[in-house]
Image (cartoon, rainbow over all chains, first blue to last red; front, side, top):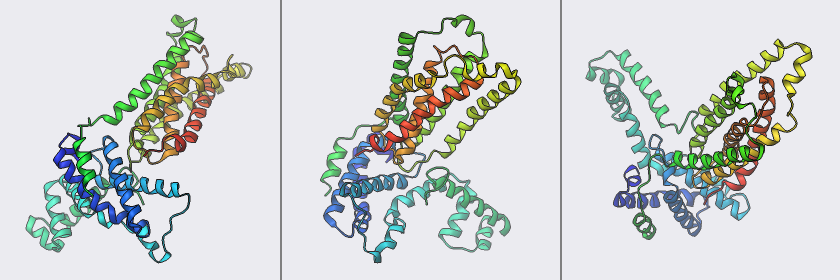
Length: 172
Length: 212
């Protein structure tokens, strides 16, 4: 997205094509699988992302920005139809579910946030949270005590959460 | 499907990182200039300008609304972006509000009971809030224009905040005309005019700030 804002058209095209695929299930799930409507909304969202791209703040998660636009379009769509969304009660849980489709962008945001932590904390978090080593093993690898490692990881995770919040006060 | 991606990327032009700030500044700046020009042309600068400029109250009447406008502008910069929140920045409003509120109460209590009415009502209490509100309209228009090109997702909140920025700017413009000198007057009647602009903004937000 940053390359796109600087005017890199090929990167931008790749990003838009990627978002096109990612957004389709987001809308389909919320429109009771109405594929035609969902496709329309994907297109509208891409256009909005294009015309509003100047409002993306590079210090904030890209995922949150993108899905806030998608949600805005969705609300707009419900409003135009003039009634509440028709989602079968069986699937109502989907509405509350996280946007699991956001995987790749989210990974990118997490990587960004990790990069802002001290190197030692970074590698501890990678070892423990991603490679699933125990605190003791990870601490030994870094040559520090287990307690120190636990404290560093705890602080690091708190920082990460902070970085990944759009602003003070995370969205629900 | 990726027709659209091709078409949009073909139309890509670089965007400055300060795009949001520039647009908000342009909208509020033009509005502010129009307000100041109207105040000076229709109402005129206060006749005792030279003497007044030596008093702290003259500057406080400019600084108080200006500080509200600046904080609201910073909050608007956040609210112009999808998924962003502005609670942290809005909290800064407490500073000017508490400072002027405390000063007003202090002046009121220190004054003799007989002079208190003059301190609160001045000579223009009945006009002041309306003129502040009227002076807020040009910057409000400018900010609505600016926001319509951005992407707020909390429309009433964003409307209220640009109402506050416009109200502060309008009061700043009006202060060049106003000859009042009491802090209680400032805290009450200026704030009332600004509050009216906030309420107008909150009402207009959901109507005017919706974007496609």
